[in-house]
Each structure stands twice: as structure tokens, then as C-alpha cells.
Image (cartoon, rainbow, N blue to C red; front, top):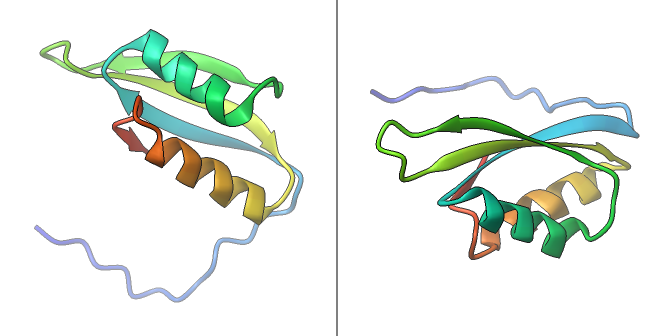
Length: 89
């Protein structure tokens, strides 16, 4: 099944704003290390979200204040490229 989105609308945000990333990885500690590597000592909230049925993956929610679109995209890309992160949503 393929989902198509033919809307040409761009996400309009008013910065600074709260933003959430869902991070999926193999273990909680590895995800925490990735967050530390990417956002250093910034204020953030990290909560356990879910564990896969087989226990192979764990997901966590990362919430923090984003100052602008460039920062939001930079954090997304840096987390996505980190060796400890399997997927970022």
C-alpha cells in the first residue's frame, strides 16, 4: 500500500517552539548516548515510549525547545546519522 500526499503545504511553525523526536534504537543507553553526542547539555526531556514485541528495538521520545527550522533539521539529521539510532520520526 502506498500513501500519497499531493498537498503542497509547508509546515508553518512559530519559533522558538517545543518539538518532539521519536527515536528508535536497540537499547535505551545507546539512545541516551546518541542524544548526549548530538545535543550536548541542552535542556530536554527523554521518556521511554515503547519496546518491540520481540524486544529487539526500543523507542524513546525526545522533547526540547527548538529555536529555528535549521536547528530542527540539523538535530533530526544528526540523530538519524548517529550509529546508535536506527530511525528518527
